[in-house]
Each structure stands twice: as structure tokens, then as C-alpha cells.
Amino acid sequence: MLNFKKANIIFIIIFLSMILIEVYLPFSQLLYLLPLFLWFLILFFGSKNICSQFYTKVKCSSEDKSKLHLTFDDGPHPETTPEILKILKKYNQKAVFFCIGKNIEQYPEIVKQIVNEGHAIGNHSYSHSYYFDFFATTKVIAELEKNNQLIKELTGKDCKIFRPPYGVTNPNIAKAVKNLNMQVIGWSIRSLDTVKDKKQVLKRLQKAKAGDIILFHDIKAQTPEILDEFFRYHLKDADLH
Image (cartoon, rainbow, N blue to C red):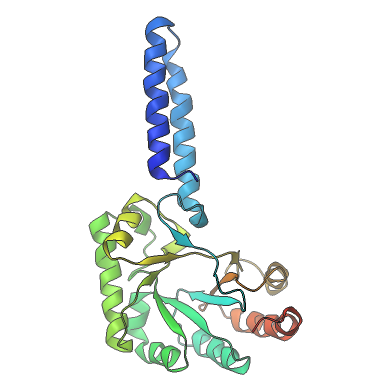
């Protein structure tokens, strides 16, 4: 599988080979732009596709094929998260909530409720900044450590799982999670509950099967209703419990 280190080695070899060829067979230096463009394209794809494993190891599906693995990002939310917890209890389902640190500070009681009802908490950065992908490694580490501390203070447990904001990985994020010995969690099904309407989301969820890690968000008003309908019509048929 192609990763960041291998890609760099390959393109260094290509550039050195081109330099050597040019000594004996001169060509336009504009040709150097072609591998450079391909290199940037591969780096971009590796960053945007969390399950490419390009920069770091990412868990995108579970070895446990007996059930669905539900995950919720961006909370806790004062209204939506409690509604989701009610639905999870109704259908006897467990989930992982990847929480943002600044939201944890605002709604600590909801985090306690999540844990008390048997769910897990994951790290989704402290700020979820639009510029998170451009942070230096030291700043990424600081964000993760700050959120880990908040989680431990409320739950009494060390947090070892992390989902990057926007699902983007890069060398700095990879170094940070390695430094903190954290596992990056991706997904095999992205519900798109933040951008699609209920009908479109439910259609996407029809392909869900045991072992899948499904990405939801507990900040959108429509998500509890989507979740309830998904469980009602698909959980029993798929024998996923």
C-alpha cells in the first residue's frame, strides 16, 4: 500500500532519474512539473481520504462483525445529544461520541451522561478549528492533550482514540498521534447527515452491514429522527444488534 514515506522515495527516484536523463538527453524543464503535480495530487488524495492509510494507520472498520459500530462527531450538543442517547437506549445500542473539547467544557453533564449510559468518548480535538489541518505538530499535540485531560477529568478514563476534524490527516497529525500513542478512527460509511436530507441519508445507510463504522453527527436536529427510522426499519432485517 502506498504511503507518505514510499511516495516520497518514489518521487525522489523519479526526479533524480530525470536529472540523469537530462544530462544525456536534454528536454524541456517544464517536464519536471508533471511528477511534481502528480506528487501533490497524491498527497492531497491521501489527506482527504482518511481510510487511505497514507499518513498514519486508521481503523475504518471493526473486526467485530456481530454489530454496527455507531460514532457521533462534533458534540456534545445540549439538545441533540440527549435525544440521540434516548434513541440508543430505546434500541439497546452503544456508540462512540467523538467530542470537541470546547463543547465538553460547556456541557460536562452531557459527557457524564454519555459515559453513565455505557457509551465511549473519543477525542475530536479541542477547538475543531477550520485551520486545524495547518497546525504545527506541537499545536496538534497541545489540542489533543487538552481534550484528553478534559475527558479524563469527567470520566476518570484515559482517552486513546482520535478522529481528526474533517477526516483529514497529514504528516503533522500523524506525528502527533504517534507521539501520544493514540489510535485514529475513521469510518466505512459516512452518513452525510450534515449536508443531505433525511431521505438521502437513509438511502446511504441501506448498505450498512455488521462490522461497519458509521459516521453521524450529534449536532444536527434531523439526526435523532434519522437514527430512529434507521433502527426501526433496518436493524431487525439486517440482524445487527
